[in-house]
Image (cartoon, rainbow, N blue to C red; front, side, top):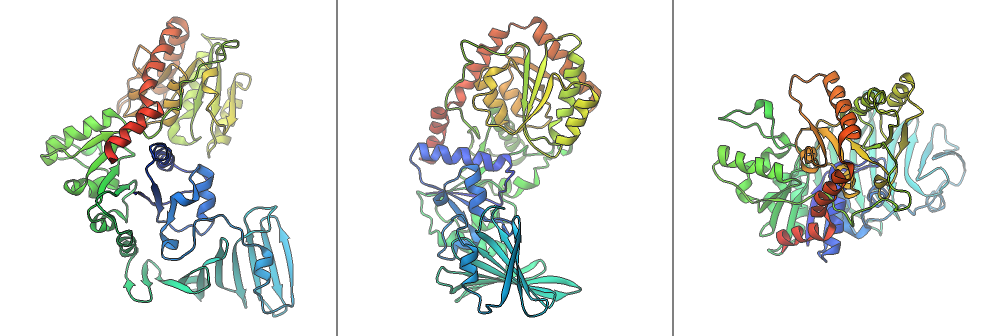
Length: 498
């Protein structure tokens, strides 16, 4: 069995969770059973809703807090009718507005607030109990009551002091006693005085053997507990971000990224490290040799794969002068630079258009920028879409990011034969952009200004449409993409796991 450890997941999952999903698909493809362990609390949503949304199967998911119960990972099926059947007091009224409802009892200031899974469903995610104006309890459900939280008033606020986790028959599996940041877990036969200790106990309960593999995606708060308790299983650490601080590293000392420092210090106990690009693997190997004196096993396995290379419709072809970019609409993606660059390039390439795919917090600001530039006729915010059959409709992909560990959208774009323009920053852009052959890498350094970034993008866009051999660039992108076909990525995992 392969156990993959992470912290949290949400509706807007990060690249780490998508990397895990791709890995799950690889393991399914090679017939390796795998489980994905999440160790955060999820009080606002049932974890199965998050994991199903991204593409995990229920049986692939383990949640730390229900691991010690007999509840299985499942969506919420517990209904309002199920809850009403548990009430001893039959004198009450029920009301509802959207996802939130209320049960009011005859006793003064006694009511329950109901949280439904959606505005048009009668399934209950949780119920909060208020008595005499004070929150006293919250119950959480899937197909039964998973756990309850107990509160007491303290300094004018509701203070959480206990979580009680249940089995499906209603018996108590264990309890978490809480005093602000201090916790203690009480089982029928033992106590644990930290969450790290609870994680360690869970790992021991897996009874790992030499043919098992433990892969850790995020080590914060759990890495030491996992490594100390995984026994004979082989262990792997996935490096998802830049692994060191370039500005604080010199010939004598390296400053590792805090997320990986513990794992790097324990490298002698790690079976393998995984990077998503050869460039990062090579950098790590050189640094380990220089600063540690020995090089651990480091393998390159992409965090995504391509089912196939995608060609445009032979009848329609690619839309002439059409540019695309796809990412979260976040400040670090610098979509505003792309918009500014395309507005400027429009003067030299009047046929140019830009479609921006993705959702995020910068949507309104970007929409306003497009309006200010009077660019709405040729620059569009397209929203969130499945990009599988969209990239091949365009002629050019633009990346404004100055930090891209891998870049799933970059991989998908070259898989559709798209030439690309982006900044020469580690590690994704140089992996997918062969400067001058399938696109352009724009040099940057600490002195590069925002205006320099914008002008760099503009210049390469104009140069591409004015002078590049577009078909030759497309052929080179397809050639780069060959290494990321699913069967080849599967083989890389086979070589590590087996």
